[in-house]
Length: 123
Image (cartoon, rainbow, N blue to C red; front, side, top):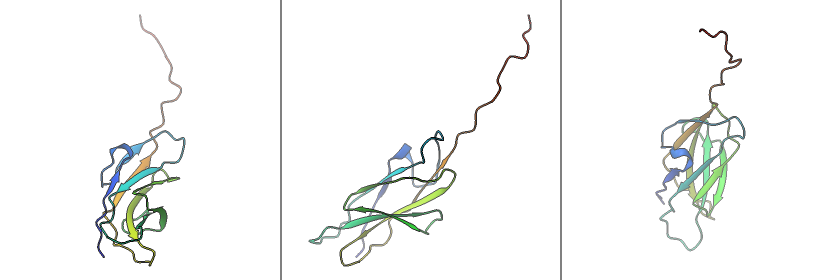
């Protein structure tokens, strides 16, 4: 059972390569992921799960999307590269191969200058 799943990154026009996104240091970053439905024809619904980790190809966290074709992953750490993938699975426990991996990394913007002032004025 081979399924073709496509992941689209919706956040800030990310591509399938790791990119840095500069965000204010307020809330932890989150990402919205979307994919195409599995072409598998079965009478029961196909479920999906987003898998991700901090090393390419090594997924240590799971975010269940159930039958949705999109998921939001929240509370990510800035300065850490995350690698995401998606798998389809059925009620019998059969799991598809992973789709195409995508990656993203968030960084703090540089701190602003401090103590900006006029030192002297010439005529």
